[in-house]
Length: 288
Image 1 (tube, rainbow, N blue to C red):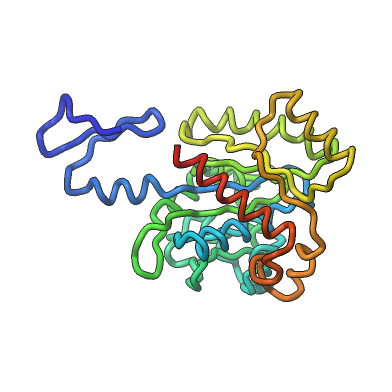
Image 2 (cartoon, one colour; image 1 turned 30 degrees about the vertical axis):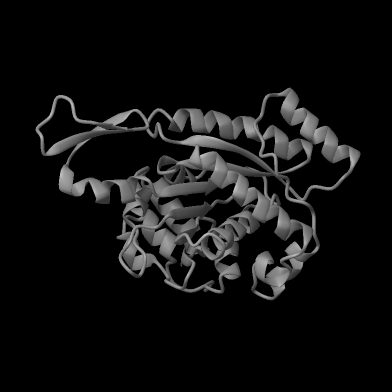
């Protein structure tokens, strides 16, 4: 929201997420570009819920269908997103580890249409080093707001793929996040982990008031009594979930062997169609 009360004629007060920032009028365009970049955090404390697939499919659809610029950040030491983008290497200190160590973000981006900051096991080494030294910095990923495309423009979307834990790399990611999406497979353990994530977001909100839980995204959905019971459980416990569910498809596993997204490998598969509907729903929700 723009306000022009109480300041010189060449400045404006801009309110976002409860914070008021006073800036010079010539800087307004740059302010909006940087501050209305959306940073999406894909997280679940349980593995095997399609976090990486969700990050990759969102990135592909936002870029190729809607024309948005997208930066993918692999925040998981296993590097599955990096493998999916054909950028994984097991040697050297990976770009995400260097980001966590405070290096400039622009030096870490691989530019290739859908741009990527890649990870490998060296991320675990850096996490251990920082933790053992008591260097628990939670602002390392703030530089993602300054990330630029190859043309020097701010990204429209930054999508962070996280491991199933709450290490300092994940906390850093949450500190700069706008929207948290929780891919959730219908089983008791995945559903019960939603409480922990919700509590963590509530704590983070004290220092990052712009963070919001966009809702759970049901993945690998089948028309079975168990899946229906899981959906009933979510509604009963007042957990928000996207109307779109990602339907199960064997193509989701197959495409990883060919280094392609679902949208490329099998665009008519149930899962690929579901992801397109989900992204459309997400965009409607964030445009309101």
